[in-house]
Image (cartoon, rainbow, N blue to C red; front, side):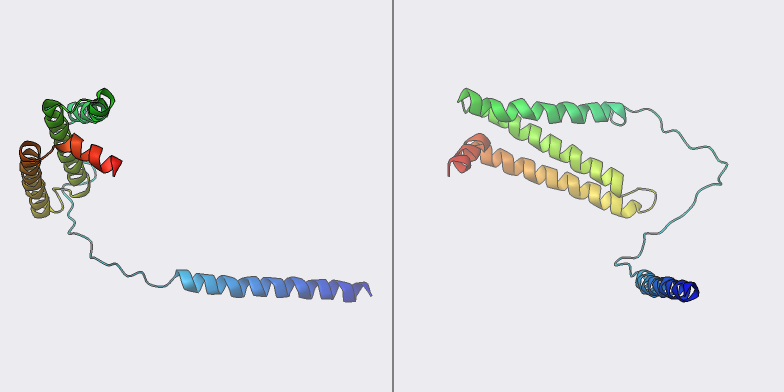
Length: 166
């Protein structure tokens, strides 16, 4: 009787292992399908060997910690510039122009950081130039549009005030 009980327990264990193996094969078969890339990877090249030292770029005030500090100061400066016109109840054109200029600078440096981070100049130098010139052109265009909006229309803070109440 004990041998029958052992054999039935053994059969259950083997059946469980077979079902796990069958499920595992299905999962493995699902996960090993070929992956299709939407876009091919950009060209890659290796300069030097593994033992070559990394070139340290020369210090520049427009890069590194100065650049990071400037970005943070501009971002922090946007907070009082955004709140002040509404808290004081004053719609001063000078404050409006400073807010528009700060938003423009903040946007330009932010998108510039995205381009620097995600469009490497070593791998795709032409695309980097195109994106940089596109950013510069867009910044000039938006700057002109904001100037026109500030001088001939109601201005940025008045527009925000009207949209907020609508």
